[in-house]
Image (cartoon, rainbow, N blue to C red; front, top):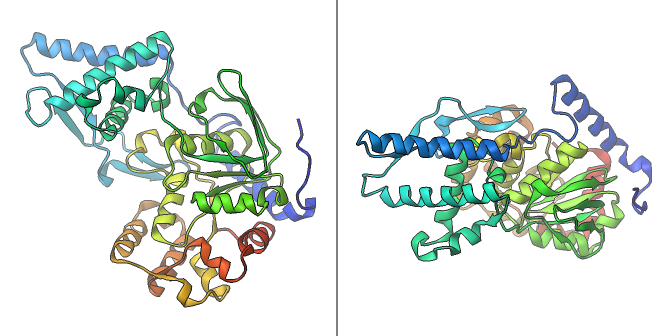
Length: 396
């Protein structure tokens, strides 16, 4: 079903269409995933078998009068991470591990909590029901202590079982928003019609379950911050650039927002762009969408979209547009440390234009928020900056 055209003339999207053709050609040359593919799930029987295998190992240890222990890949060391341009950051096959021992005072509680949550996951998968991470926490909030403990254990279990987190039947509460030319059906049959108006739709909590996705969007714009996303909606940007889709993860993206961006890319293979602040934090957020994170590197194939391009705000744009220095913000020591850290990441070597932009930031010792463009005019971002970038290919 087509969407009513309200945006610019077809010629406006000529460079975008060329970019899409280039992306598709690259996919074809590299034997890329078929349309709608790319996400690797585990069946319920595979998940149950994996849990049973772990429990069997515990029983075997007890039978031998040995203290049971969980062996989990170390997700906090760059030594365990490899980089592939077509996938992003992923764990090496033979990485260092850590043991969660049942006879160690330091780890015995964590061992018990992993066992408890494993039991819950087994019941959920077996009964084909779902629970949120918050539901898990509130089954015994005093025992778990805080939500972060539950979140980390669920990631550890996913890594230990070598099973995508969405196959564990545990859902996350979404914080992201989506707007634009997109329709889909949720798992329960609810039909969702995203619009280009001033109200966005919450990112679904079960991305795995959405189906019948329909769009004629020319591009997908990832917006770092909610305030910028809302401003673009208020400025009617979505309508004026229609057909398009906009997504925000409201800062560091949650799992569901990343899964949604990945699903949209796998399904439609439309150009995906990132609009972030010209600061180290914004660049890192863009890198999470594009190449993934160290903590979730074991699930890179389900989360990363290496085809993402940096649309703005580029540090070079600050000089090009003559944005006054008094609207910029000096880099803090923490900013400089973050920038140095990102520059050392393995993916920067294959992004020379990104490196150049980060070096411009490092040399100037200044950063800028997207709101700095309002110095030029209150709606400069939506009426001039983004349309020109999209029309003339101003991405890297």
